[in-house]
Image 1 (cartoon, rainbow, N blue to C red):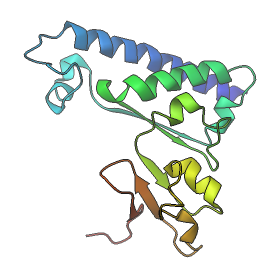
Image 2: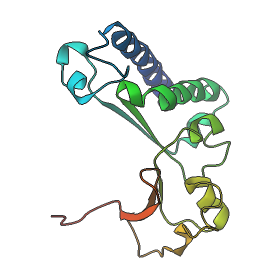
Image 3: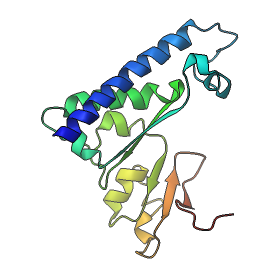
Length: 171
């Protein structure tokens, strides 16, 4: 419970930061910020405080299934996943089985980039990569236990592709 209280306090701070950033962006002149989102130029201006923020949560189902804090954490994370990228904030959530209870639909529907390591069946495959992906040939079920660090990467570009998520002795 102490860990969850710490997480909730941190997420509340990030919610306030999201609001602050939205206000900063709204107040910028249109010629400096025509698309109403953080650009590399804006992020490099230290006085604006729009540097990238990455939030990573492993075993996120613990948050969303919590009886006391689950609904609040879901609301904050939903807002972050929807508005955060335009404001320089990226939320990364990890769970072993992203069903509607462990990863609420409002969040998973807005998760653009997906990584799928080895999964045991078609259902789990499609939970991560999207409906009918397994039937259409994108099968993370084909990976073996020896394929550590290899996954399907989907959401960026036209077709999902197999990538290595960890490089050892990379160039």
